[in-house]
Length: 259
Picture 1 (spheres, one colour):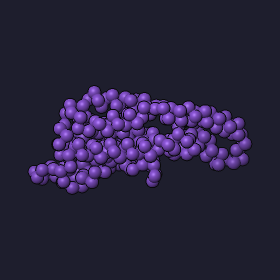
Picture 2 (cartoon, one colour):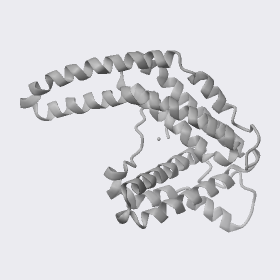
Picture 3 (tube, one colour):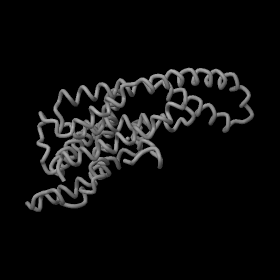
Picture 4 (cartoon, one colour):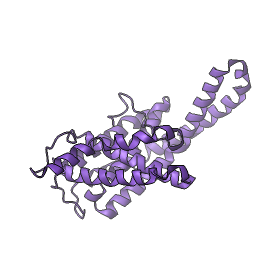
């Protein structure tokens, strides 16, 4: 499999994830649909980052910026969904005080309805379909640092190695990191996880298909990269509440997994 083949498969997966949740987000009845739409956009942005060497820089940045702007438009409605969910949970945990939250729930529900109505109009008139077509056309468009016919695993090994080294370097100093640096570490971890999930989804990381026959060292590095994200994330489990490194939630019908 070539880099172009793998990139096209990853983009198709991300785009289907997004398409499958747009209609439900417009209706606004199920908060999970909006959550999955945001996850889908986030995964698409992560795919552009993972395959950045296979995309012309200016094209990648233009599509990435447009996706970020679209993702930000989804934020307010999702925030109200989360607030109401958290208040509901608090009521369930302390039923004796449930009545004290009545006015807050009514206010939040009214505000959420207004925000979701605005979001429905935004989605109905958004340039999302055009944006997704632009993303799909990035495959093999030219001007990239890596040729489209490059064996996919060569790119995967290089990307995962670089991201693992960066994550481990920051991890060594995690106890002394300031909030902004912790945020950078969280981003590094998520980039490593997303890239590994995208690459493993091709089914190539456990084998040597796509690589020309060569030194045993290459084959060893390929298999090591198939699990490098797990070894890098293992020490971070105790810090997950701070770093929020857990997987983005996906459910059957909302997306094709691998956030």
